Image 1 (cartoon, one colour):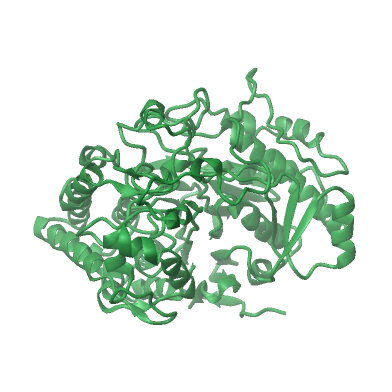
Image 2: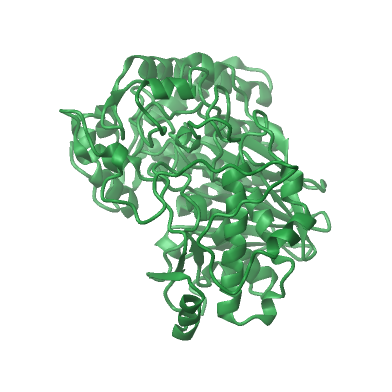
Length: 595
């Protein structure tokens, strides 16, 4: 039984991981905006009301389908590592991994610039219109989420004693806010207002004013504040020491968000589009290529789950071996998506669960996966965090935990469609920059410090990220735009949604509410890189006989609470003249609107 209605409309649809963001996005249509304006407004609100999951200095891939086009483009909001970031620099500090918190792992902030690029090139409204809801919530406050409170509470000691600007931003009179209490961020509101003021002062066309806001962020007062903070401050981080940063204002000034072609694969009459191998997006397509050889509808539930999970293991093993920034590394993407290769890989799937990472050999090259720190259940404290220098509080260990993500999707009656998964720049992993009201990101932790891998750290190179929104077209026409939070699990939880809809005929809302599952077979992309090679994690509610059969096949089945895996958000087209929207009930937070 559905917990939420099937949403259909004639004008527009928005689905995002916070109800205030969805409402802000829908308000843009009243101003004459389109789906791209709506997504931008929603994303800026999410930067304010979900600070534990993303921020202006984070990162985002934005999938874009423009009405009348048969293609999908990707606005890349993943900034590169600083020019000073080299493996040798980290090794000279006694590090064999990039820490998961602090200033050392900061990339060039990509989210703000990417949303401005989307607005300038695809939207219609002025920056002042789409930024107004975010400014309002930052200045006047918003009801703080329980999860935000939980995270602030776990780090309150650090915020009071070490990351003082974070304490001023997220604590209320030095205390942790209560769930639902109004939380304000006047410094962030002032940052947004100054960006708007400099934009308006530039005059000229709408596009010229948006470019002026970009310059104010990446070459003006924002870049100057980041340069000053990262270059002169030493902050406690997950290494157990205090470190300064490598990011400079010059790094920000030389960066521009790019628009790239998507990567795509045809499946069951749909063309599925993903961001490139600087994300984990192609792993979704690799799973589809493997699953194309099976009739999932003819299988019983245990066999189907086994098959989907074993295909995921093979696709994600290739992610570990082959993915990286294609501007800096040779990524054999065509070979990875070749159907002949998928057929060869399919032969590796047997009746029993595999506990071994098995990447394929491609183009005469042998795969390489660097040794991981942890391939079983992690110890209480990873060895590289075991010792803390005197005076650094033990709470900094908590900052190294992997973060989460947000999602924004929008579709309008014209046929414009967008899906994005903003992330990074969250409150727990990096201190707030004084005078700006937001922290830097820590995406650099996903790069390797070993030599010879496509994802090896290098200056001006994007670390391979987990962010992975999706757009699917049918006969060149808009069909579905979707995504979910979830780190490494994004392309498993959205795959489950997609298969439920395409293979089993569920409506989008039914598909997002169905029991979710994933494997923890591959090492996490976040430091430290934990893995459970045989784990099959499923929400509770499956028949005991199904779970028994999976265990018989060798899966280590882990049942978690119902409605706890993912927050899939969906918009799309229902027929030729209707829009649709769906949102996961998990977390009681994501919200869809259609009208």
